[in-house]
Amino acid sequence: MAIIGPTFEEMLHPEKMAPDVRRRALEMKTKDPNDPINLFNITWRDGSNGIYYFVMPKELTNVDANIVVLYGKDFPTGSHKVGAAYSVLIEKELFGEVDPAKHTLVWPSTGNYGIGGAYVGCRMGFDSIVVLPEGMSKERFQQIESYGARIIKTPGSESNVKEIYDETHRLRQDPKVRILNQFEVMGNYRFHYHVTGNTIVELADVLKKQGIGNGKIAAYCSAMGSAGTIAAGDRLKQVWHDHKIVGLEPVQCPTLYNNGYGTHDIQGIGDKHVTWIHNVMNQDAIMCLDDIECKKGLQVLTNPVGKETLVKRFNIAQETVEKMSTLFGISGVCNVLGAIKTARFYGFGPNDTIVTICTDNIDRYHSVMEEMSRAYGKVDEARATAYTHIFHDQKTDWIHEGTTEMRKQWHNLKYYTWVEQQGRTLEELNAQLDPTWWAKHQETVSEIDTRLKAARGKSL
Image: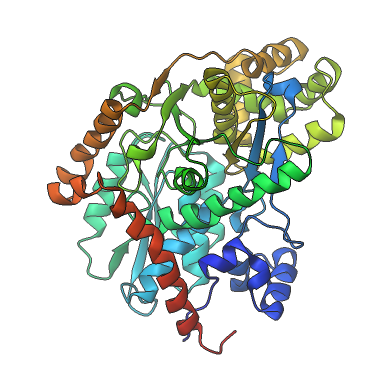
């Protein structure tokens, strides 16, 4: 059976797909979201090739800089992490490392990557298992099962990744099992470097034509889970050499910030280790956000009383408020709060643009919002007003700049996970200090696309 699915270039520019494929994919997006043709809807662009983005209202951000989000809710599965899952799997299949007739795929995850793996793996004919902490939102488990994958629950919550590794090590003993580890497989990095990164490069010109910004992206903020998404910054820095890449993590689990650890509830980020695919030598700052503030921020954006308060007390247009209520999950709020800190820390003004990501949306967090109401009280106008000031009053605390010495410390933290626990060699680790190591992985995009076109043959 011929391998099908989009190339990196087609995910970046879906208009380059065969017209009939693009038409069928767009038709099935609503008619049958589980049809495998929806793999061709893995893109940051809509049916008219417009980018999925939203300009945050300054009445909420309370900074002069422009803060713009790319949002992932319109990808298959409702999160851009399906792109990373697809890229990881298609590369493995192209190089003959996995075969749907022989292998069971295991997707280690704290949420959206596992959902993406369940979707992609089952659409591509693979038996798939998602290894997920038991403390994640119930919506995540329901969605994984709806795509046809099995689930293994591990102890803990978001920051308990070692327990996931322990389980995947056990599963690996079965010769039929193949582990698709988002934390180390470079297909994840390549998707975001090429597809997300170049989408943002092109977005800069779109924004400038609308009178937003100066045609550059001053900074890119991303909280790290697998550290795939932040790879887009590597592409942006190649275009604008003064560009700032800002990593974000929870105050409750400040791993890069001060070699810290802990438990938190910004689902999808802050996994208590530095991932193999994270180019820390290219990062300009690490900033920490409070998980409770992120969840309260999501409440005010999605709760009916919160939305009403944003309109009446903060003069944000009703249409804008309604749009925001559909775009954000917890990590998306974290990313925007980080972008606000970035604007203040670097003194960015009205000509500067900061881009960040909304990974998923509220559909995965209704149960979390219910727990917040039980713990802190239902959202009324007073609480909504106070929660809005979480955005207004973000401080420039919990920040370390990426000095040469600090970057080396971040790099050294990889040793404990990847050399001591996961079997990488010291030579492999230190090779990442050389920028050409990353450049070679970036250049592999064209090889993957060539292989995929050949494998597809005349099937498309």
